[in-house]
Amino acid sequence: MQDRLPLTSDYVFKRIFGQEENKDALKDFLESILDVKIKDIEINNPEIPKNYYDSKFGVLDLKVTLNNAMVVDVEMQMQNQHNIEQRMPYYLSSNYANSIKEGQSYTECKKSIVISILNFNYYKRNEYHSVARMKFEEPKPEETIDMGYKELDEYASDYLEMHIIELPKFKKKKPEIHRKLEQWLCLFIGSEGQVEKAGKLNKEIRKINKKLASMSLSNEERNNYEFRLKAIRDEASAIDHATRVGLERGIKRGLKQGIEQGIEQGIEQGEKQKTKEIVKRMLRKNAKVDDIMEFTGLTKEEIEKIRNGE
Image (tube, rainbow, N blue to C red; front, top):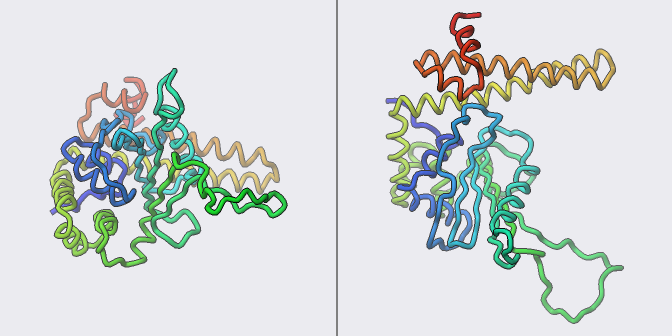
């Protein structure tokens, strides 16, 4: 029997939770993270973009609206792209700004929440589920005045909220999976026994586990997962190689220009090789030339050259 496709893949994550038929499971999963009761849930971007083979497209995120009052962006990241601190505020501000139309009052803005599920450790914090909001700093004594307030506001705004779940930390904790969030996270990285136990405790987890098993038997879905995984790995490898080449050249020359040129050349070479490998794999899977052209941006002549080994 083939191994189950992992939920830690952004492609698999969105294919599972982006389906209308799995909305109850998505609602249950989000309730376990946000600790709120969700009555209504709307998936705003259920489709898989046609250029998902290209890892430069970024993470396949899932945007949902909860209770018609919150806009939530959920993303699963397999590899550390070293941009979490930039990505999350961008998603937060973008979702918040786009929650109202021109002419509407600011009071009609919907709360913006970003949930990042990471298959790696990122922040120097001791919890596997971190929550960040716009919290006031401790005041400086020279700037403090007694206004008579017995209770002070702790947050500047409750409309921006970030959740970071670091799966390796969860695994290290070895939880008892009594809580709903622990049960769901077992479905991502738990052992077969833990997944089975979580399924007995939560019918939505049991349902999604069956969906994953069914999806894993599909050659098309497995090929799509492998294409996406290879694209991400190729880009990471190309960037790593480019960085090393750039640093070596920069050290030898003692010039910053050498590092920048080496990185640019390495990335360009790595991207070309990655595209070439994707074309070869798609040809072996008998993909149509028109589809390959659309996914890769190459011309028919360029694809034929790769087919002929040139």
